[in-house]
Image 1 (cartoon, rainbow, N blue to C red):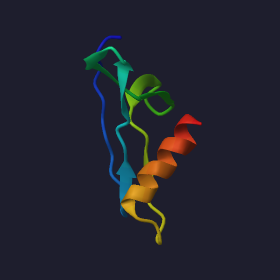
Image 2 (image 1 turned 45 degrees about the vertical axis):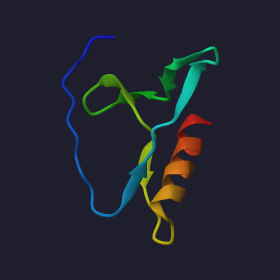
Image 3 (image 1 turned 90 degrees about the vertical axis):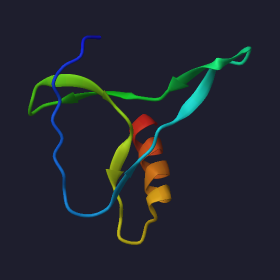
Length: 75
């Protein structure tokens, strides 16, 4: 995959994301994988890798938001 320019916008209110990491090979403790979403952004018509992230509900902790987003966005 080739690098490309990426812009970020912010929205008011709390949000949370998570980085899920696991050992890629149980026999190699130095080898890890990171869960990324490969998503299409319609505004810029580009594809890119992202961590699961989303806006927190009013009564939700950021940790709960991070877990919910990981489940919602990855199935």
